[in-house]
Length: 173
Length: 186
Image (cartoon, rainbow over the protein chains, first blue to last red):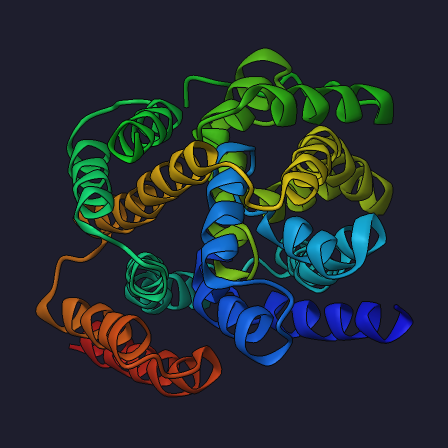
């Protein structure tokens, strides 16, 4: 139990500092480690947890469910601290330094350099998760339809998730 | 800027309640909009310019952008305690909801065919949500061929070839930084 909690803390605190551009960046690595390395859950469970966590703000709390599956509620809370502790500490420090030093030039350069990388990571996370699970054609219809609608219209994402759930449940009947 | 801050200091309790409200109401995305609405428009603790500066910084730091944003704004308003209060307020309700849902889900462990199918459907849509987020950001922020090439390399590296994130970052962050510096110098 303690060993599992330590594994959870170690895994998520490393991922915390790699999550450039948001939590989506580390999803493929998180999935690989939780499923293939630690065997805490299956790929399809990972997708279920991803769906649940995406529906609840801020949309990046899948770590809580992975930790909970591995080691109960304590595991969920350790995962939460591991995933958000280091990045929050960094954000706090950077906020303080920024307040004192100004430094608009380096910030703008770094923002510009980071943008295409984070955008790539966000798109790659979607592709990686779709490829890792048994994505059959109805699921692809939902994924592609959602992608198009959310890119070009202002539909509530929660509505799309509910629609996807109803559609695939209807196909399964 | 249309929204001026009042300069009235935020109490820790007010800060906590504001973030608690934000975390409990922003289901289905749009969290950034909710944070701005509550802190800039309603409470007037920040003006738009301060909000945008904090937002820019929260994107540079690794980790969930809106969690980082809460830390930075909380710390600007009330120091370290403000940062802790803001994040705790933001995440308290969502974490409790998720732990409860998780408990239900694990108790049922993949028993029912229809529930499994429904979750897979919600998951398929959630994947589309991620893809659309990336595409929308791309529409606004990828203007040059070099930027598209960097984003494309990351997508192929992680999405198709499944190269570990650390290796991709160690190569692509310096590459992107060099490209940016070269293009700025021209």
